Length: 385
Ligand code: GDP
Ligand code: MN
Image (cartoon, rainbow, N blue to C red; front, side, top):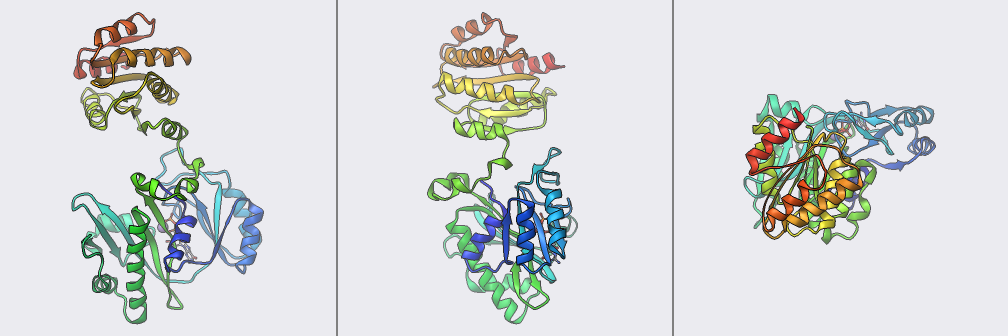
């Protein structure tokens, strides 16, 4: 689960990590007023669930309130396209207005879960800012990594080692040690998958300040934090993903033209691999989980059909707990309801498979039944070819 920069900064602030003074605006008049309040010189920042805004024109330094208002008008409602958004971009509905800061140096600092070591890993670089991806690619030695032992946690001497590696000295170095320790505490207590400050800056006046912040919470821990669900900005999510969430279905959008309905994450991965093997490109995949009911299968199928990139549907379901006739009924119900004319290939196996196949073939839908996964993948690719 993601949150906006301004929300992330509120959390950082609560953990004693300094952030610039700022306000969130929902209209360009509010942008103007906030700018006045900050004394005129401020930074206008589009709030979207993606980074790379600076280079995409979503962050601007302004000097007077009129300029702020004008830029606000330009940004609100605009779809901002950055390397992290995909070609359709994300709509700007909230703007953060912050007092402008005179930056002396920009650093990168983050803590994220490293699946290889199963530990939180602290990542720091003295070359932070908008080009961090390029630094990582071209001079990886400038990125410092530090795996945190979950038993001992992060010790002050370890945080100091990182601050020193960033080239900090004196009181700024000590401030940075405290900041790193606070960030780790925040990361643990808020169940984060990622906390990132880029850039963490030293101002010309010599203070440390988190200029940008990105948080990703672990979805599996959201139930432990009552306030998280209300923090979601649904305007930043794919409507189909929101719909899938309502029915407890895992839906992932992809780039191809074959909609995929599968049960189980492992089978989903295998299905995508085999489709690719046969030259197909999945448009999405939807995992209906273990014991789905007919209604749930129907909802899942409808979500797939609503994805306008899907020009055909591949259903790959192993009916262990699920009965194949119930799956077939769900598909027929949904396809009938939305008058689906797309080609469908169904590969299913398990309980009541013959009954399920018969229901499908008698349904009048443009459907084929496959004998196995390879056969099914080949068929749907051919039907779309
Ligand atoms: P991102 O591009 O989405 O990561 O957005 P950021 O919040 O990181 O902003 C991009 C860049 O804008 C930062 O790396 C800074 O160099 C610059 N920036 C942001 N706020 C200020 C500010 O108050 N003063 C100055 N001089 N630069 C700023
Ligand atoms: Mn940034």
